Image (cartoon, rainbow over all chains, first blue to last red):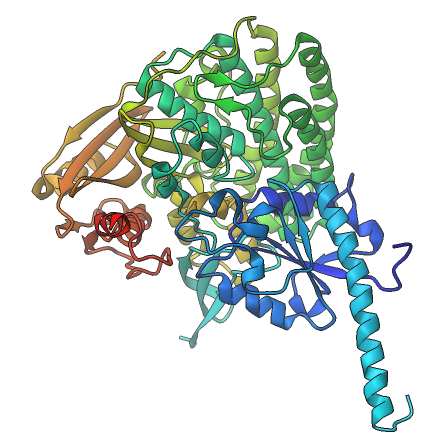
Length: 155
Length: 359
Length: 122
């Protein structure tokens, strides 16, 4: 990816992580790693966001919260599962209160490995996600012009 | 009297890195009652003692929390060692102390950053986290892990720190200290920060003691309790005094943590100067039979790992009582009577670690 | 090296409140309340500390025994008592703040309880 035409914003939610990945997500945004140099800003409002970073795995109580945040993010959007817990449940997969990876409730575009995921891997994951975001945006545009064409409108 | 309304706070909230939910009962702008609810990150891994033997469980104990992971692992190991009567070599105890204090530095810097963010000082947040990276570099160079270290095991430690590296760390601490001085001067003396923190979320000494407050929350209210004084690991051989402030407000809690940064640096200097040569671990044979409440001072306060074994490889019970759990009742007291706009500052002032609290 | 001496004193359930009151009057702080399932019984540990002296008392009860709440003496104890109720299914009577099973919501009811353990083996 050579450059981004937009400035994508991320939102982070801790599903049932131990905090290890969460603080690494924050570390990726701060000096030294500085994800913000790609024009990326961490926001607390899902309606501002393009990229959804989830750490930790799904359980009964946060299922609805994760789904709700996902639904509030406008299209196009990408989901990055940060760390092994968000991918599969990781070291906690056998716990009674852990249902498994985030992909059990929402579609995941990029999986970032690690326990805890390193900031370098997180940045790599987000940058990969931006490529997917661009492709999704392109696909939406084409679909829109196609639909418009079918109706005989001027695009 | 005006009408009461309930404002939900969390679980997803801009100031909270972790999910905590509070129902705030308001009369106009004033909070009259608070009902906390947790459980968003409950995993229930204490139950896994039935499936992982006591040596493997160290990995789970460490992942109680990604911020003070080393101290969790160490406290658990310490509990098993006390039950089994294992004599841990001196050098290992000193290394545990050094890593514990580096963990405290990284945790307090992380908190200072998040706290600054809660009252709108983003640049200060970035600066605190920039300094924190220096601490993480040392942890990574010496243990291999930035936030989850995996350096502790039952009977000792897995890695050594060579004398050259120790000397280098000793020097590096000088740089860290100077940077922390600049940083904490802003927290402690900037008039707009003092304005935001002074007399906000006051907790009296009596309340702090009887509601079970621990760590900087207790010490900020004048309660002199620091579990490092029990002399676990190598703390019995180091000279230090617990940092105590008496005002009991958010500024006092912030001051305690800021001053503890310097205390930690002093302790690491002392430990590096006194660390003896010797083996890193002892062979562990048999299985734990008996019980012990292993206590330690985590950055957030007193931590307890209760372990109970029945002579098999699998423990009967592991019960982790984390400082955030016991700091929730004091938080409820602090919030009652405050203004809605101060809620984020007060919540952050106890340094909540929900991942810990719910396990 | 022993770090500290820890004494555990068994206490009858009927005398619990009196003993806890004694600790409170002597100026101990409540350190924790924790429950352990052993066989068909629950061991409940109440730990106190004063000037780094750690003291523990223990009541051993059957699963259907009602435990009196100690929130009258230690207001903050509600957090442990609710936790014990949610994770073990221990009934606690007279809590100052009773979440009625909603403090920690779990996918399995009372996961640490004796009944849950038996269900798993079958």
